[in-house]
Amino acid sequence: MKYSGIGGQAVIEGVMMKNKEKYAVAVRKPDHEIEVMVSEYTGITKNEKIKNMPILRGVFNFIDSLVLGMQTLTYSASFFEEAEATDKKVDAKKENAMMGGTVVLSIVLAVGIFMMLPYFISSFFQKLIPSSLLLALLEGVIRLAIFIGYVALISLMEDIRRVYMYHGAEHKCINCIEHGMDLNVENVRKSSRLHKRCGTSFLLIVMFFSILFFMFIRVDSAILKVVLRLLLIPVIAGVSYEFIRLAGRSDNAIVNLISKPGLWLQKITTREPDDEMIEVAIKSVEAVFDWKTYVEEIRSN
Image (cartoon, rainbow, N blue to C red):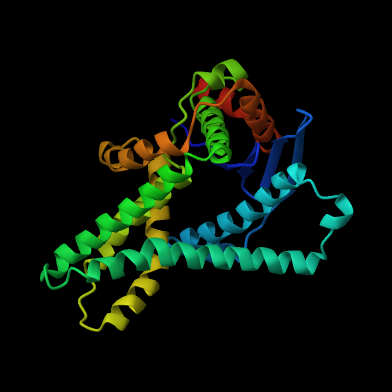
């Protein structure tokens, strides 16, 4: 399977697709018309050498995904807000500051809930489990349970279920063209909603790699254990990104095996979309990617 290089995410009643620095957000508005916004996002760093360095690029990509995700979510939500347009006008500097604050808060909460909380819970079992390796494994199991539980719990919300359906539409579009099929509703409908380069898979891989990395923390000080865990988070994110990047380009049996849990989890974080959702996702792809040329190249090889 040829790698397309495009990626995306679901937003409120829509899909964002990104190809290099260009991205598009397609939203199904309340009047059922599709609005498409095309723009560019160069990332938090402009230095191409640093941006493309292995491991580091995973850290920057993760932060960029959060920033762009917040921007596109805000854009899609604007079509469904009931406030008057005059009430929604915000100074650009204030809006950027609020966006930055939201991203920082999201990172802090994610680190606290999914990284630090499992450590503190597992520390209560220190007297029962003297082995540091077993404690690290228990911490990892708790971390996975919290993460999967969170994903499953929010899937019960009606609005999140619709986001998951658009998430499915995003994956199905990418799978459709990467398998050499014309991008239309019929072909997208019969394509898989699971994809190895998904952000869900990335987060699950982060959980797995954290177990391996934290097993090597052999210090007695509880404070130092916490500090080392915090310092290792960017490294874990970078290594996880490299794996997801490899998985998206490889059909190696071992890579496919390690990718399986992420694909299983996507059965929760994606849902089968309806045709209107597929139409939105197609519009988003077509705004940033020449799929016809890409499909012709696949067919000619």
